[in-house]
Image (tube, rainbow over all chains, first blue to last red; front, side, top):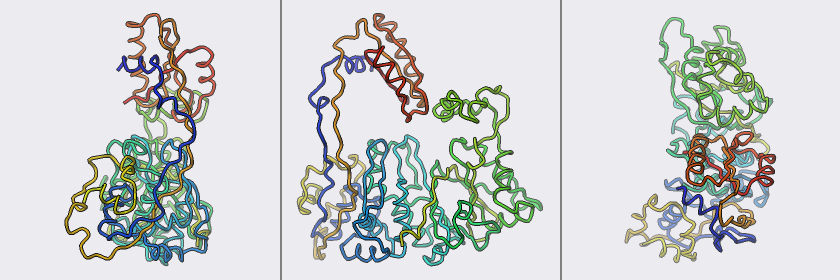
Length: 376
Length: 135
């Protein structure tokens, strides 16, 4: 290896290394075919434009139908999205529509897809970590689209939940050139959630708390999609006896989060039964629960400093004097500190069908909330 | 049907294959089926790609010819394992190329953040730099 390094510092540049000028990336023709559907399916898969499952072929007719789901013009620029370190690619309403068709979206789902696209957030990221992504959907649109927020809310039991999540990954691949292994995707193990991401329609009617989008400043009647990024989500039920007379779910959440890195936020996805129990026990707002979790989910400074994420991200912040990292790095190894740097690193949403008092805990950070209504 | 034939059918250059995904991850078994094109109606479909910006190519900096008497900066970005790797590189230079002055620096900020002060220092005081991201 050292010979290669020394050679790279001393040998003359090759012609390739000396090149200058502009490079224009060829994305191919506007249309493919005419060809049989079977061959086209294989062509899209072979050229990395799918998730390697069959797609709905985006014919002009199908795309026109999708475009009827919004009042925005087909050639309107929706946004830009970057795959890793490359410059971001730009895309129009029509280009988003093509991907929405491929994923199996109906035209009424299209404003939600446009909102996700407008966020510029890809669901595939170049990190060697294998990131997972989540989209929390709030507002009356959940019922208009027949989204599932009841039994099996996080499973493959409703077309809008499935197709919206899948479309997010397809547009991340095609509109931003994301998810090219070894190039724009370096996740060592990959993440199964990337197939259709974690789409969570909040069960607002059964929740005793305000919906997530209202916490973020939107009105209850607005339709909003909120995006998260992190490492994944795991079920946490049974950690301390769910069926005891006095289950303390907040302690169960804390137990689960204590094995997470703390680099990403904590997302509780609680069945309404748990939310109602916590509400009855005095957590009459999500904020009270979050405050308890922040104060009671802790770690030692020694454990904190031992984490790669702390060395790579927080230590340089500490050197710059940013808090709480600067204080944490001055504390003794046995000092106890919160697992998350900030209170707002913790979020709570309610989803599920009340068949049991179960929950899931995500190592997922909140990113952004985008209005769906702006894209109708 | 292989991918080159399929591309040809679709009116596209087989050169596109050079830009396709990692070899070995794609199955051509269905495309090779002799039934693939039998009796099915043909359709036209749309390209789902976004619009990439033109990319400005910048030539790499001229190489040094020799490292004798030169100053090489080792820059730890903070990425997991990078510092350990650079420590080993520093030891190697000390043992095998003692005429090289090696300066070890931890870049300010997380690894994806710019550090203009360090780049300025390297330009002024160094002849070359090696960055490492570990693993």
